Amino acid sequence: MVIYFLLSITLLYGLFLSRVTVVRNINTSSNEFYVARSNITLFFWFMILLGLAAFKGVEVGVDYPMYYSFFLNKAYIDLLEPGVSFIYELAVKYDNFYVFSVSVYFAFLFFIFLGIKKNLPNYLISLLFFILTYTYLNSYNQIRQMIAVSIIFCFVNYLLTNNKGDRLKYIIVIFLALLFHNSVIFTILLFFIPKKKFNSKLVIPLFLLTIVLYFLPGFKNMVGDIIINISGIYAEKYTTNLDFFFEVNKDKGILQLIPVIIQMIIVSISLYFPEDEKDLKINYKLYHFSTNLVIVNLWLYSLAGIEAIDRIQIYFSCFNLYYYPILIHLLLNSKRRFHGLFVILIAGFWILYFALRLYINIAGVVPYRLFIS
Image (cartoon, rainbow, N blue to C red; front, side, top):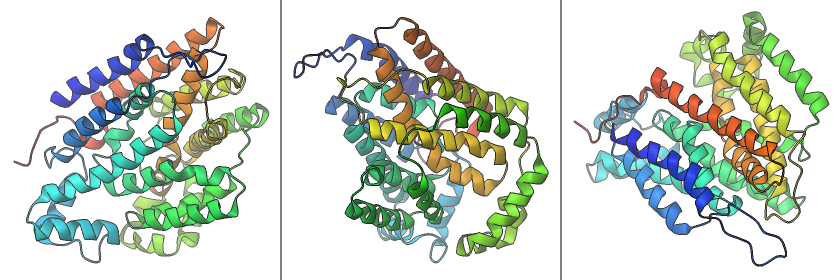
């Protein structure tokens, strides 16, 4: 239970100490509250989260025994992406699985933390949502894909300019992420996401349509067939079990939809307020783009149950780590009292979401054990 004790401290740290360590921005005529950008904080939690992930027992995480088996049997050659295979070769060379585990989790956390450092005003709130949204614990199960996700997350700013050179850099970023997971090829779609925030008149009707389509498996299977036809090499990887990967394969009912609906409500409200504050040092281009990616992620729940779509959603859901910290920073710096109630709603929902996922044992992280037995 060590991990849950430490994660609870993280939650308290993010919720309460960020309100105590108020920093006034003395470089402008305005006051910016709840700025917390301590590199010591980042380093401290980087080491804590790296240690908990890299030195956990092999049985912690549904897929993790597979990674250990690859190491023991040297069965990773021609099965995995070149970046992961290279790390395995180092682990085999030194006859130590921890070379693999430390390397992959270092890469994942490095890019996540670098993205937070570059783009967010409050590291404490950012780390809080890194935990609450289950992004960290998902890596206990899907580490190869999560490395690719973290790379896209870190360098997405290249898409927010009109500079052709930056867009070329984003293509290079995709090739870098391809070393760890083939699914990253779908992030080419991010080129087509508008940079201006979606209008509520479009978002709310599509959210309602999403809820309806969520309960229509025939529609999902039709989409699954289309994905098979256009996926090429990525589909070939799953030819032994296409029904599982591309068709509806999970029992997702109303209980699984309720958290999605609550997120839809939060996002819909945020489209109306708070307004952008010019005096705050916030990357509003990133905030608006992340809002759109979060909206797309919620729309994709109309196809919930198609494993291929679930994998794609991971790339979109990761941008909750930009969207929510910036939204809360805006709300905390607002002079309107009811904005504080919105913060309580958001925090309360995500704390409950995190607790319930732990209780259900999503990703097989309970119970937590240290070291390979």
